[in-house]
Length: 319
Length: 286
Image (cartoon, rainbow over all chains, first blue to last red; front, top):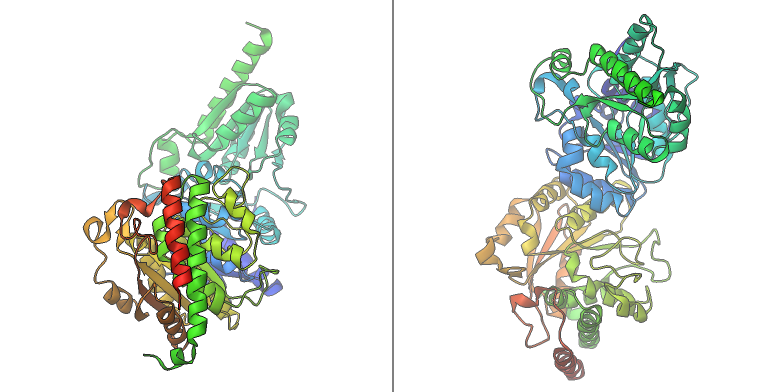
């Protein structure tokens, strides 16, 4: 695997690259230029960045207004502020009129680490998916991130894109092509499918590797478009494995586990085990310590896979 | 008295005053037909919207999204019967749409919806329209365009926290292309603003946020025109015109009565009295 870079840092560099290619977008921040890495873009294009001070609600509606004057505004802040502090502004003034506003949020989940639960956005997928007219994206690595930022700028309408604070390796190679709603298969397998999101894709791959030494062949899928999801495409990819484990650094209520369960209940019922934050807040600590304490580890994924396969086998044997 | 106001003929003022009476007739009828809606705050801003739509705004009814247009956002979106009335009268859509106000499959939603011809932003979740309008002013200024953005906010609305985030940003960015009216009718949903959450000293608040502040009788056509004229000449500052108005203005039994904030409609009898009073006022304009 390649070197590790956090997606927020990669995002700052991608903005600069795209800023040289096109002049139709501007960036906005609420005293988070450093934390979101938009500072790199601001340094290069000071005339294309607007500061709003510590005022996310105004920033969100101002972006709505800016979008009507021919700009593509990109709102930058942490997930907790984007998805909660400024949620109603996003819902009513951006999503409802389908204004061409992009929201890029960093700091998801326990991966935020020592800043603690106030800054760990563990609900943003559930919240943003509930808003009509909204595309929700969560890339696993910087290859996918760049493809998604390009898509986001070309797409007409509201997009919520998650970056992240934890350094991650590339899991896709240069042949990766982003297709809205379709979840890429990162590793082939036939006994169970592990559906992972964002920083959890790497853990899913580690789990699949570990399981292969036990003779279990696990497929790994990257759930990177959280809305809309191509349900048929997903069912086609998981049907043969007959069981699924979802992995997310997010509450298991309304996140990837819920998306997968909803689709499978409707089209192709099969056992689903969820690994994620079990309806509680996090705490301060290093990300790895927190993942250990809150049960989001390679070992827990392996355990969930064995459980899902057992459940599948019981169903298949008709007991 | 301001110099250029003297250049406005009394005929122009009378014509606008008559138009405002027609706007008011549409407001009460719309709320009656719709079965609900906000009469009080719509009537208080009727004169301001009349002056903006029939005297000030550079807009094209046959091309609502004309790139060169000025923008208007009704942040106190519950007063949308006033907005829908002026838009219909300016020809953005037929008067017949007013009958479908608040009705299923009708175009005219209970609060302004983007997509209705002439409506520039969603309004009604208080504080948001003001901020969205501010973003428009930033965008137009960044592009070096001379178009202006106008906005009406309610006096109760400024109790919302994000109003002050917006006020601070507008002052910071020196948005002299941003002209706002504060509809100071002293009433809000549950009663008098000074009893529910006092907003005074309101003038000092806007001054402290680096705005130019003007104060007028917001039901006086001549004073509204004069204030807009003065606002246009302000350099490097957004302008807040504190418009002292009467909630329910023009209908005797609605004036300064909190219960006419919304959303119960007038009865048939009340409608007929209201229309009679408003028609008499229209005919009485000198």
